[in-house]
Image 1: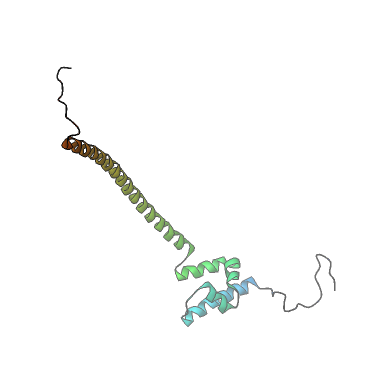
Image 2: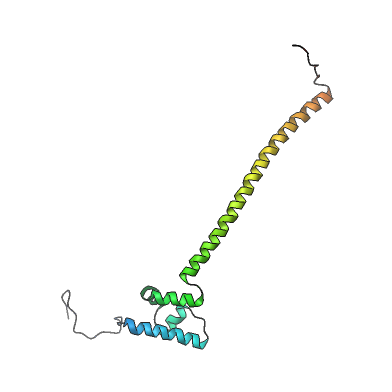
Length: 145
């Protein structure tokens, strides 16, 4: 039987059509599923609640984000808690990075200073070896010129 746009068919629903959910009853079923999981002593998770309630985990994430957040909070992984924990980790990492950069800069300055001293000493060694071998004659300094 054909239907025009905007009208509904009189044919009965088949099994392939998704069943309509009552948001209120589904929310209540999810709350009850959370209680059943706790009472059974099972690990609380969004997946476990979805399985217990007979719905998909995606439905909880997408349609009932407040329930998903409640589950995360009870597990100890609330969004705010996760964000605050990450912010604290980032702060510590930045402080460590600042300290390490300061140490690196000090080490680079030491390397430059030591390279200069090393080059000066190389020149002195070369001069002393040449004087010792007799290839270079030390000239006396002239006074008054």
